[in-house]
Amino acid sequence: MTTNHPAARPANPRFSSGPCAKIPTFELGLLSDAALGRSHRAKVGKDKLKAAIEGTREVLGIPADYKIGIVPASDTGAVEMAMWSLLGARKATMVAWESFGAGWVSDVVKQLKIDADVKEAGYGEIVDMAALDYDTDVVFTWNGTTSGVRVPTGDVIPADREGLTICDATSAAFAQDLPWDKLDVTTFSWQKVMGGEAAHGMIILSPRAVERLESYTPAWPMPKIFRLTKGGKLIDGIFTGATINTPSMLAVEDYLVALDWARSVGGLAGLMKRADTNAKVIWDFCERHDWIDNLAVDPATRSNTSVCLKFTDERIKDGAAFAKAVAKKLEDYNAAYDIGAYRDAPAGLRIWCGATIEAADVEALTLWLKWAFEACIAEQA
Image 1: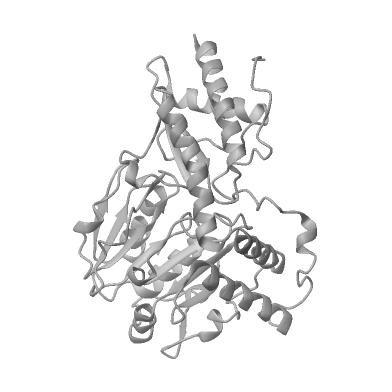
Image 2 (image 1 turned 120 degrees about the vertical axis):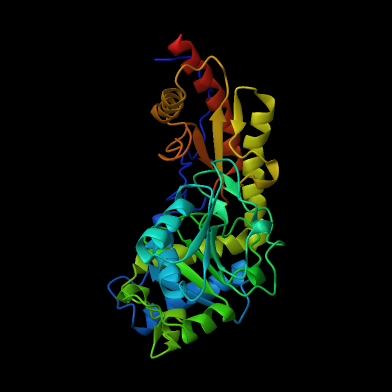
């Protein structure tokens, strides 16, 4: 085995991009108040679900007239619910610069067969958001989890748009300042920036989105778990804690605990600062070494959560094999878990730097990353 590795490992080597690291103060005892063995439709269950909704509104600063619902199947379910329920009333513009955005394109074009313009950019780049036609319904990811590229600002989205903006914000919510007045539908899941458990998604609707739901009926059959209206009216219960199907009350409690922790670190501003600090450690590391670089071409679009990296050293013989070797070595030494690039992304690494990560652990990781790189270079010679 390779020797002369750094002496100190990250205290928490969990840098997965989902499910992400738990909050730093997490212990199972924090979940002792979970409404286990109780109906989610009993008062105790409804109260906790409503607390999760209103806590989300408080921490994220979501306007009072926006609807917030807990829905099945994580962020994927929330995005699909939005597309199946809202698209088709007018032409759509589908935007993709990474794998999940590409998945939404495929679902709309091939499954729903909606008239849509498709705008795509390669990994590390981004579509020109200012050039889009916002009189169409625009579907896009705010932060590309698999590409490390994010929308730098919502300023280019016009206030007087005719279409709806449907935004997959799963690796942006709680780490980036989302402009709610520019977003008509926003989705995310608990298991990203808040380090919650999987399978639960959230959907946030502007008054314009609610108006669309109540005035438009899609031409296709609507699965039960996608139905947001009944008799032409929004099902208000979904947005007060009466979920469509049975949620995990243990996961709900875990999310409530995470929201409490978010408040303790300064709310959204504190969460954003933590993510920015973590990401900057990696960015500065790349500046100091010429063998590794950020996948994002434009620094203004670099993600502060899913930081994607590429190896640039000309001595590397097989980029994919080399990146896997580095990731494996770090995992074998318990220095970093689950940091290989996403399967559809270019070869490299993906390091989660969201708010539940400690900057000291990222600092320690960079020492191990340098060691693993040098070790793998030596081993391939």
